[in-house]
Image (cartoon, rainbow, N blue to C red):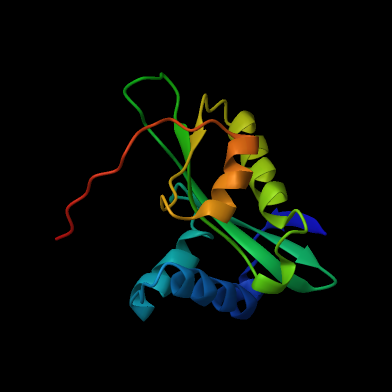
Amino acid sequence: MIVRDIKPEDHAQWEMLWEGYQNFYQVDLPDAATAASFARFFDAAEPVYAMVAEEDGKLLGLVHYLFHRNTWFETNVCYLQDLFTAPGARGKGVATALIEAVYEKARGRSAPRVYWMTQENNATARKLYDKVAEYSGFIQYRKNF
């Protein structure tokens, strides 16, 4: 398995993983949002990126991350926004490899922090996250418009 930056020709396989991610979180994003997200990965003016885990030409997982300003640091921090492993590839180190790859990208940009959120009841993922990061104790609040 290798982890690499996403390529335009990954679109079809990426979209299948992206649909799996949405199904997991029980959301149905508009096609326009999906198209805009994929396009951003290849726009140098955008601070959002994607990597994929691949084995024998098949994508096993995806990670999306972005860099943004933060009032606690002089340099940008890294937000790991989306992480998904195909069901058949779970338990094989795909998610760990994707997280570690984001850590490397963050180090390369001198980001002092990588952070992410997950649902409180996502016990399987939280077991991994407890091994590769520390729980901050923060709770998210939001209001959609």
